[in-house]
Length: 281
Image 1 (cartoon, rainbow, N blue to C red):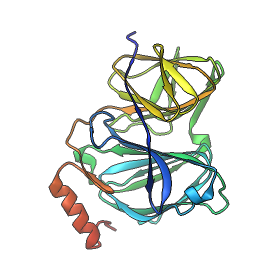
Image 2 (cartoon, helix red, strand yellow):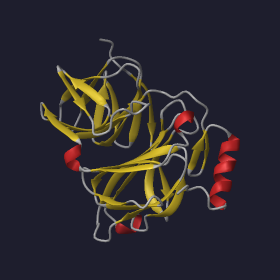
Image 3 (cartoon, helix red, strand yellow):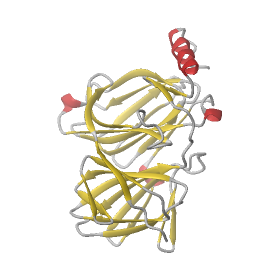
Image 4 (tube, rainbow, N blue to C red):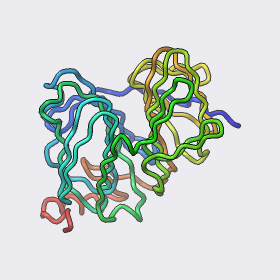
C-alpha cells in the first residue's frame, strides 16, 4: 500500500471568538481546498475560567456544519430549532446549520477547566440550504477501541486497523467526513488504512507525532498526501485529532458566520439575518 507522507505543517495561532473566549485557530478559508471539505479547526484549552466562561452567546450560521468535541469541561447548547443539550468529556455535538440557525454555546458554571475542539465542515452547494439538524453524540455512541495500548475514539467515518474496520457514530455524509481522537503512549506505532479519496490532516494537541521520520509538535497541523495507509509514531505520550473527508471542490465564499458559494448568496444570508428570516420555522 502507498504510504501517506506529510506535505505541509502549520502552527495554530491564538485568537478570540464569541464573548472573548481564547482559542487556538487553524483557518482554511484563505486556501479553501487545503482542508477541503473542512473549513476551520478551533481548540479551546485553559485551566482559567476567565479564558472561556463568557462563552458564545446567540449567533447565526448558514451553509455548513459545526462539530464540537470535548476532552474536558462541559458546554451547553441551545438553538432556534428548540434544541437543548450539553456535552462533557468524550462527547460531541453535530449541528448542520443548513439554511439557517441561531444558537448559543455556553460553558456550564461549574466548569473549571476546558479542553475542546470545534470543526467547521463545509456542505456541497446542493445541500447548503437543507433543513437544519442537531445531534448530541454521547460517549457510549462513539466507537472506542484499544490497539496495542493506543486508544482510538472514532466520532465520524471509518478506518481500518489490520483486519478490523471501525465505523464512527456519524456515517453516510456526502463528504465522507472522518474525525478520530488518537491517544498514543510513548514510543507507540499505529498503522491505519484509509479511503484514498479522503483529503487528510491531523492536529497534535499533546506531545509529538512522527510520520515517515518527520515530527509534528503540539499545536501544529500536518497535511498528509495521497495514499491508502498512514503510519503514526509517538515520540512521547501523544494525542492527535485525525480528520478529513472527500473534497467538495466548489467555490468557498466566507463572511463571518456564513459560508456559501457566491458573494450574492452571502449578501442574501446577511439580509435574511438582518430581516429576521434567516431561520425558517
